[in-house]
Length: 397
Image (cartoon, rainbow, N blue to C red):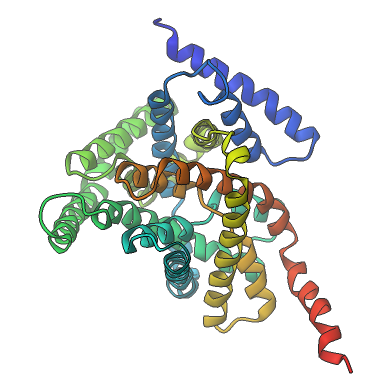
């Protein structure tokens, strides 16, 4: 019994290794392999993991570590270079997606306004991990559409936190009115912001400078883990999330003179954190949903693809860029993001979505992620393809 966690890690990474090797031969992206691993090890598939709560703990650990690395690599100097795209295009994409999704779902399905808005939250985020990796692998990160995609994903990464914090408010949880809950939340965030400023400006740089006197990378890494867990626990004490604390810890360390060393220490572990997260998400999926609700899965698959593509295209056109860039961006970010999984779990907790809709959402998300590498790789060919389709009609007669 004392080796319980060790046996679980042995099973998770052993199956993951075998699946990734097979995926490599079949030329399937590694992230899809992680999701397949999760489905194979799911309590809904095998008897190895029988406790779903244990799986959810693994998912929470994965998201905390993943959010820390996102914060760690969040560079304000990079943000300044594309700030117009981030603030203009990124904000437009997120709010267009929320508005279109919430409006269409309310018109089609007639759920409550709160549920409709929450579905907008889920659809607003795209997969930073998959899209950036494909852009980097194909050397397209510095193309016009690559820069815009990066800006949109950066804004989405910023929006993760407010969307997570707004979820219980739209669910009507907490004491008092929604306005009071929102004001109380803003007060907590202001307090956390003040503490984060003090830590970043005075305490953490001095602490890391002292640690560096030891001249040991191992001690530096241990100190980083201490800071991440400490700040995460602090945010939880304030009634916020552990994940928010991990993100703030990453941001604080990114602004110190030791951020490059911190990235070099954590970079080898980043893909372990990412694999842990995607595997745990796959473990939460009940594969039988594909046999019982396949019609709804197909419907929501195309709904999400088209709504997200349209919102992305509108955001690019609002910034007065050409149609080639607009189509490439729109379809490249037309998938569900990693952090939407975390929001979906909050939705379950606050009864904004049902168990069955949650399973459909997971299935649709995995399918969209599966086709994303192909779409992003062929993004520049979308505009010429549209022209070929439309040209005969324009010159006919």
